[in-house]
Image 1: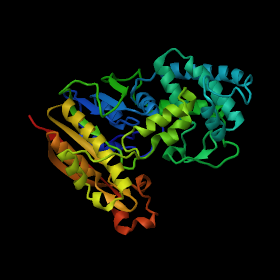
Image 2: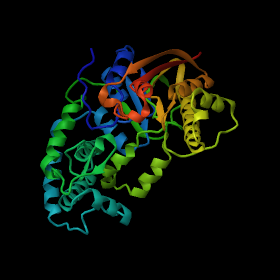
Image 3: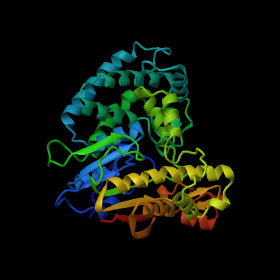
Image 4: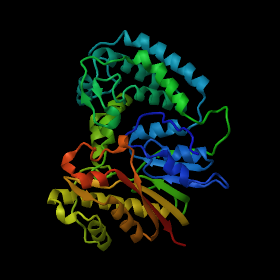
Amino acid sequence: MIPNIKAVHPFPARMAPSIVWDRLPNSNPPLKILDPMAGSGTTLAIARSKGHFAYGVDRDPLAVIIAKAWCCNIDSKKLRTKADEVLEKAKKTAKLLNSDTAFPSSSDKETKEFIKYWFDLKNRKQLAALSKHIVLVRDETLRMFLWTAFSRMIITKKTGVSLAMDISHSRPHKVYKKAPVTPFEIFLKAIEKVIKANPFSVYRRKYPKATILCGDSRKLSFRDNFFDLVITSPPYLNAIDYLRGHKLSLVWMKNSIEKIRKLRTTNIGAEVQSCLPDEKHIMEAAKASGAIDKLTSRQRGFLIRYIIDMNSVCSEIARVLKPKGKVIYVVGDSIIKSVFVRNSKVVRSLSEHHKLEFVSIEDRTLPANRRYLPPPSNEGAGKQLQSRMRKEVILIMKKSC
């Protein structure tokens, strides 16, 4: 039976832990498990808890921090001591800040305007002070846990330290004139939540190491034939814009709005157009989507860009997977302007081109709180389309000898 797995930080559309748990053997011997689009680290945390070597890659800097905090050994005593120290120093620093200085150091004008829009002055002072002293923490692991607690005060559904709601679903909209809570009030509570959720205490059993990198699934740094198993959930075609919400935290970690914008436009699933290349397997994958002829020229451009990106991902997965190794894709099909797009068939078609053999496919019904493309209340999608979007596809492929 799957244990009660709690996440160290909110994250939109997190992969269901049961998918990974049910498909991973216990460590005998330990396997090398990869999630090349790791998100907050569900695959990695479960793989490590079952005694396997977990490897993850993601382009989102906040996702990498969260995944590391979920998968690293935690010394709760040291973390509590350091959090108390940071908070006391921050309280003194906040008294010295004003409306012109309550920002992370080196913030440019655009980033400052963004921060002023989403955070009231009192909370700006407190967040600026906390971030200043977290940056100065020398121990990288402690600093990572502190940033995770810092971020989860911001990335919330309702009650956070910003003026927004629904940030945890990556749909932030300004609601408050004054934030409902202050950072100094809840920082230590956020630390306790991180401690409680992390399953890898330094005082308990030893687990194989988890390796989590900031990188691109379209160009992995691992050698050929390295992994026994890949478990991953590719983004939707019209992907959830994780960075739309995450940037409210990332700006306090010395990331400018311009830097985040550039990252967003180069992500898989970003709405950036491409032309259909003269490659047979790309054209076949486009046809497999079932939607190419129903889309406008602009929408076809988005689909083609997605297929080109996923072709690179599938190629890399096939390269790093051992012979006879398997890949488990958890794929959500998409909707573009009421047109149903079969991402799962796109991924299967591309994988087969890269010499991965089909093993099995099954539909999994999504819980109501994870049906987000489109939400069930979206009547414009139609009953048939809404029914399709209540499912995700678990596709298993195998690398031949």
